[in-house]
Image 1 (cartoon, rainbow, N blue to C red):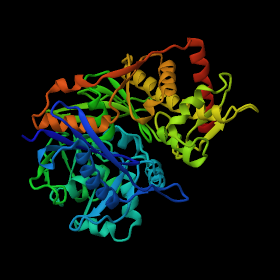
Image 2: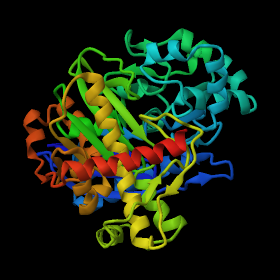
Image 3: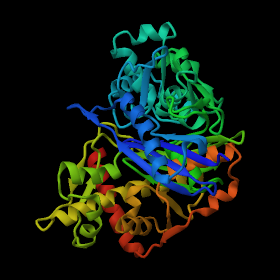
Image 4: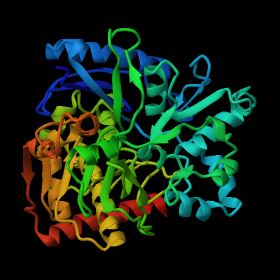
Length: 491
């Protein structure tokens, strides 16, 4: 009997494949990195073809690790880095340009033009998102403005655009399906989250031909079948597609209003389930769709941070203060408790809740005794400060107090960071034993859709808990120092 679930999580740094057994537990994981193509202007790109090849390879590797026959696969799910944008030729599947990564702010000039035309509020009211180069609309507009022949081909119906999920679905189905799900669509700045459709006026504003857009499908809907580029003798259905942060929210079991999670990846997404009606907040967080699953739409408040795990990568690869991310915990614990160093990691601007795309990074508050330990600790602390600011904005915007924070991602292995996060927010932080919550969420969505799982699957994650142990006076003092540092950056 076919009873194994394949999940692919296509993230910023690499591509992962996971195999899940009949009880919903992960049996294996395999991953491969892909190149980060960065130029001297700070533009960030990925090669879509490299991602596709890596996807096929990690699937084979994960099956081999699990000792599962490819013939026993029942269904496939996909989670993906959401705002990264791809444009390819409909007939050949050849990209017209590299994928423009969510971190890339090259669309800032386009956004400034639209801001000057007084369109920012119209865009926010329809999409729930502030006008920003962070989102795909400006990235795709940049491609059509600057890549020779792209606009003309789009006018002839020859171009497909989408986020990475759309690219993979297209490739997996050999060009038969051009689809995305509601969660990814809601992050494009082109989707009307009130009317649940591509917004024709916004497509005109960003000068994107409507024929380029993927069909929007339920997150547990039908995305066709795949034989994994001819590797499988019998194709399997693709039945779960979610943006990575939405996948993590689903995998964490945050299915009820008021439940909140933070994913610590290259950047971070903090997400609060707000139920079946949207709430539009002026506190610096955005409104998106959580998913459409079981025929039911749910909304979220969300805040996105450009640099969290990437700050640790910066410590290792760029300034070379440490030679492995795992060493940051011990260095932070050894730092001078009285040191007042703060790092504001605005390496490519600041996301929520500050929204300053022009901001530059800042290291401040150092004294003559500040050394490696103190700078490493400031780098870890800035992750917790940013997430705390977003959670507080969500609690204010929704009128719902936050009882606990469910977290996932690689940096959650850092005990110093997790304890500081709990101390700073003054609530428990709960970490599931399994790390790959985005992929788990896509697997659960696919498994539920295929009838392999029921909702008891969410109860199978064991969790570690950190509880606050910091005095209120110390908490306020530290957070005030962070706010002062943010003011230096933002003015």
